[in-house]
Amino acid sequence: MEFGVQDYTESNTRYLLKKRNFMGLIMDGNAKHIESIKQDELYWKHDLEAQCAFITRENINALIKQWLDSRKLDNIALLSIDIDGVDYFVWEAIECVNPAIVVIEYNAIFGENLSVSVPYRADFERFSSHFSGLYFGASIKALISLGKSKGYVFIGADSSGTNLFFIHTSLESKLAFTTAPLQEYCCTHHARQSRDTFGNLSFLQGDERFDSIKHLPLHTCEY
Image 1 (cartoon, helix red, strand yellow):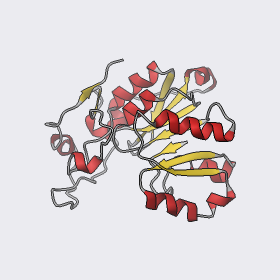
Image 2 (cartoon, rainbow, N blue to C red; image 1 turned 30 degrees about the vertical axis):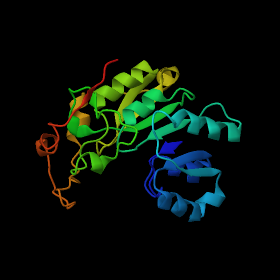
Image 3 (cartoon, one colour; image 1 turned 60 degrees about the horizontal axis):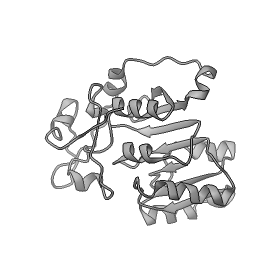
Image 4 (cartoon, rainbow, N blue to C red; image 1 turned 180 degrees about the vertical axis):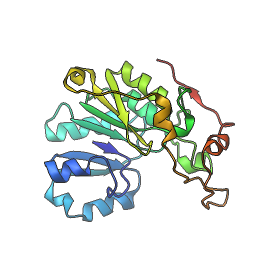
């Protein structure tokens, strides 16, 4: 199950679908993206349901439950959350499944010390909230604390400093792993996708990225 897949050409679950024949639900808020997915041959080759939905903490459980019921399932193996916005609050709200693995995007430019997220808004949109596109998501510390409160163990991040990986505590003894200091998972994020007020790439780097949004409100996450 993956939220925020765009046209599904770059995702965290596509490999499992194609190489391991998983079934799944994917969702995105852009109808054109969903239509593109449905035109891909993988859509008839696999049991994949693509839904157009703007995900909020208010609707997420109903969306998941509807799909589970349609497949006569009561849980999922993997959950991937990447909606470029209020990801923290959506994961916090999910109660109807306890996946073995959770993958969630974090905002590395918040650094390793802050336990924060952008404040919750059901209609949050990344570039509408700030022209730079850098004001979204939650910090690594906030998501690790949230994961722990939901019964998940942090096991690492990808090399680009984009996604965090968690496993359910029931699996901890079955997997050998070590984690690095949190700062290492933030300093590897070198993306320079910031925009100026005209929508052009401004290529901010390093601390310039956080400096451009540090005046904006942040929600302190406490667990």
